[in-house]
Length: 284
Image (tube, rainbow, N blue to C red; front, side, top):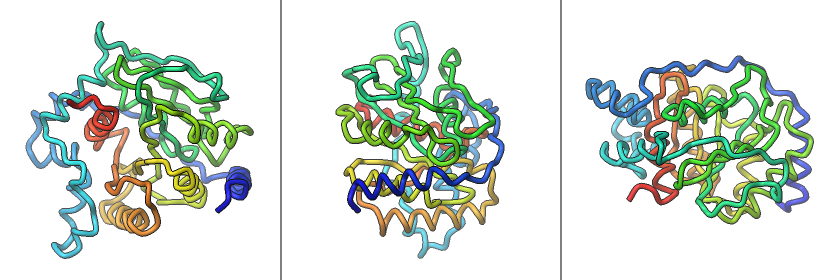
């Protein structure tokens, strides 16, 4: 699809209100990986590797349908990654600035990752969970979808910068297309885009447009499935298999392995931290 047509499709879709559901409150006690290591093995696996737990429900023949171990870090690697996300006097983690245009964004040499998704997909809640080891970092989580109107930049020590992008869909900023498209196309130090999909409802039409944008710009991106605590195991497994099939058949730039997460139970959060540390070159 030509870019002008893509831009028109995005604008059109952002005029359609999305179904509204209240955001969940992140309230897990398993912020630090040292707490997780004390759990019984089965419970630890469920919390750290939720995709493996889902795989257990499949027959041996159908387990090949899920890519569970493409990114398969050791527990030691996950522990190392926790240090990247832990605020200390030598590792300052803080909100840096906000911008509505790329030329207003901070010019930093460190690697950058961005998070993007539909309004009410749980993006701010996820970022807050990722930064739970740095409690002084303020990530505003609103009960009203479409709260984020600017690109918000968070500096994670000397390691990398995380960018919270405005949500698309309901109450998206009027200049969303110009803001996000320019950032995705021209940000030189952008290492990976994390595209959030609500695991309860799966890939929606607006998500498909965002995926098409990533593919059009040849961006390496990752699909993160949020709110996995909101569904039964059967429903979640069905959604995960459908999304996995879509990634395998319809995408080229998407990382093959899915990352299911919950900002409430912290399931998948430690693995996602480790993946971010790895792709930004901070897991050596």
